[in-house]
Length: 274
Ligand SMILES: Cc1cc2nc3c(=O)[nH]c(=O)nc-3n(C[C@H](O)[C@H](O)[C@H](O)COP(=O)(O)OP(=O)(O)OC[C@H]3O[C@@H](n4cnc5c(N)ncnc54)[C@H](O)[C@@H]3O)c2cc1C
Image 1 (cartoon, helix red, strand yellow):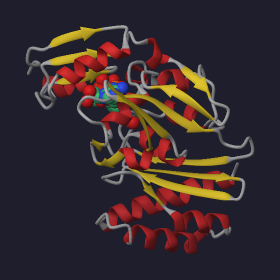
Image 2: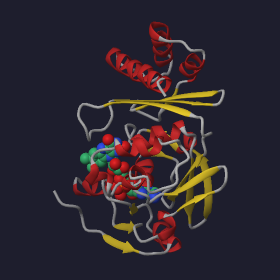
Image 3: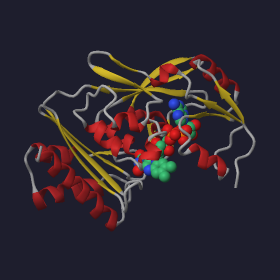
């Protein structure tokens, strides 16, 4: 099947892009790298009569340093993180995670903003940005706002983005140089979305464990993080993680509990090796 007819708006101006979205009455959509949007248009799953191409807007491809955090423009591509072309405040986690997304052809065009705006529950950036407590910068013709990622992601493919809004940047607080992270992604073969994706972080006296690919917003596992801080290992750690997953209100099947429990324990083990 081919996409229905649409107009393509290409502008170097963020303001103009926001105007087009404002006038689109819900039928204008942002086009980032097209990695998900183009297949969705071809399958007629994303009704749109106007696409607003963001690729010429310089502001969306820039990064900046506020002192306490780094701000990454929404149009920065997975490959730019993977190749270490951008300043890093995650002690290498963002670079490592970017390199595990799909395969290189997708990473050459897919963007951090597009991935977060789409909010596929298995998307790697969703889990990484939740672990790092990122803040999402949004803009519309009416003004700007900043949301913590946990208020931005509302559920599977659901975000706080209004029809007339663009995700313009992702702000990531700087980790201490001594902070360590652990990573474990389960996928059937390279290039596929995760079946389970766990991340652990120890930053000074603080710990954080986040689980992705959980049919909704990533789960922040506070009890697993406390157990990690306390040095709990083996079966005792697995029991704590399993209990937390069962109490999370996500109706995981027994097979999913086993998968997510294993990924979480292995992410914690990965952190402990560093
Ligand atoms: C074969 C394949 C395998 C993949 N595997 C993985 C994987 O393992 N892990 C993973 O995390 N991802 C994976 N992806 C997703 C991919 O990496 C991209 O992140 C995702 O497709 C978004 O692509 P894009 O940035 O080109 O956005 P587009 O496809 O252009 O846009 C996606 C959606 O977001 C909206 N949008 C885009 N940018 C903005 C913005 N700045 N503001 C507001 N709305 C916006 C669009 O309107 C559209 O609805 C895979 C994709 C493919 C095709």
